[in-house]
Image 1 (tube, rainbow, N blue to C red):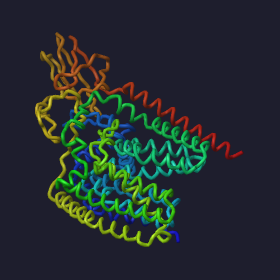
Image 2 (image 1 turned 90 degrees about the vertical axis):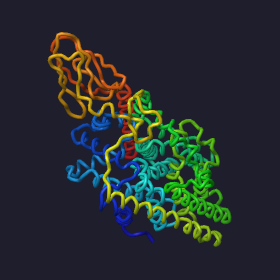
Image 3 (image 1 turned 180 degrees about the horizontal axis):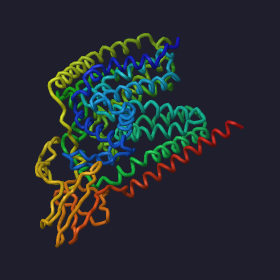
Image 4 (image 1 turned 90 degrees about the horizontal axis):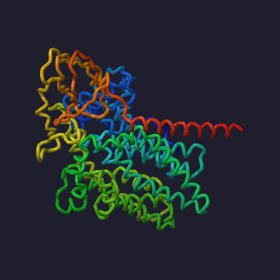
Length: 546
């Protein structure tokens, strides 16, 4: 029997799961201060007509930072649209909680859409969607880590897999669906997109091709998937091309050199054997144990029922393989190109939870070995400690939020490349003390006039008048997108501030940002990809009308 009003059921679940944040606003978490600062600045520019804000002028104590040249924008676009829709009447703290509510609801809707085609009943699909919304690591991303972008990726992953299924079934708009979904994943959270692209996505493509049986339809399917993926990367080029090609202008090495980010330090199994499980890894470890038991139960039932080639067996295998990666049993996986740069192996839990719940919902338990239900019961019991730890940690975050307020904070990796930092400074120490009382403009030697007026979003109106040339330093972090109008060469000081030499006489300049070549190329590639996508849609619609 089909469940009544699944959308309303999923929204009710989302309201219940995020009730503390909806009542109190954004709770203090690992990344909450950063999320609040970035969301406020991004939405302010968006409402002012800057549809893709890349430079955040209030970051780093108003020195500015190129945050969204590198950080994926999709989740923040949602928050900015919500800000515009509500006329900015909500505080950033409550608005960001509402954005998370929509993302949690969207993850349930996407999971329900994915499951209802293959689950054994619509009710099972609804249960699976609810389970994904309440999954331990999913809620850890909200209550403990505050990982807004990774939290958003949960809403996109089921759509990517659903699009692959549509391509395999030769649905009319399957390839275009795949392109849009893969682009969305790439512009939501890069580590998740990378891990999905190394595990679940290629494995599911190969599995679907194998199920097609004959070589010719399988080859055509692989080609269509490759085209969909390439088109998706093309659509995401407005973000990916600048993010990848401009790495040399920021302190990106901070993401890899700090011992905290060495991925081998976070393998789940060695940490458990050494008794080094903190709150996050404790919850993850209990959840991983429960998912592994559930996946083994699915495989047992499938094999005994003669369904070892079924889709539920496939997803159980994916779940177990990814759990072995998370545990560190196969460390070579984290030595693949780029995979070490995801920082933490437990990021792969996004795939684990999706795969485990998919396998459970697709398994015909009544047709298999009755003893298989024992696996399911033990898995549920295994989730109890994870749920207890999650509840305890959530209460601590609520208590801390009642006593303290977040202070806006930025990440060290977005400081200009070569910015001098304290030796052995921790991740929270940005080493900005020398710049705290720096004036907006300073000129050497001091001319008759040396002033700067703040303009929108970090710009400056600069006026210098003197009988000799003067070295001008502005309180703005250097980035190659800065330009002076009229044109004059800009350089960076040892503290990585914008500097230039003002000639003798009276001059007025405006400091502005201009699109860099990677931005322009990114827009061109995305525009071309969008044109190809629309052309394919028009061609398909035309053929359908004949």
